Length: 282
Image (cartoon, rainbow, N blue to C red; front, side, top):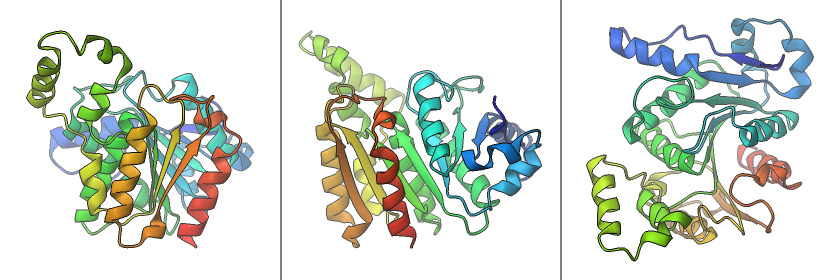
């Protein structure tokens, strides 16, 4: 951990029930706060109380929800966090239950609850500073699930960025490159469907976006072979059709060379995000 990073303090705020409090503390214990690089010197030697107070310094905040592989400290994720930090953002990265050093078993309901926990914890400490949910790959499904729950509670998310999103987990699964090799084998697709149904895994972003009002930015690489560009385009079309205020929905397609995990290497990524958020939050 460098001087710009801090693991979040777990207190205060958890509900009184012991097992819920234990879960709350686990989520927040695995929250990594990277301050804007312009505040890196100020952050040296500071405790978690200082980091919490820094959340209402006026610099925008991103809650980053990672994909299905590895953990929040995977190299490409740290590189993205650095790009965002250098661009003036606070970045809060969390390992959901069952990821990294977080305990528990990952479930769709559980991952969604973890994302809501971090978002609400952040909103309670940031004053008027806006907070953006940023999901990548699997994290896009977590982000839209969380955003829909918060919308239903009357607390729409300040903004949402979906990087390499899918429409729902079924579409994402059948388009996964390795699975395509086995699709012609008898019973393969049925086995997958049964497994997803048994574990109640849906991540229905295509349905969730129909109920959202938050500014929504979709980012997708033209040569993404993990989640094909067509998935992102389809999700954009569904959202654009559903949104009352069409100007709140935007999609940006990145040229070949960045694949699934490396949009942060694009020289236009930061400007794209900052321009969109500045316009929406003006």
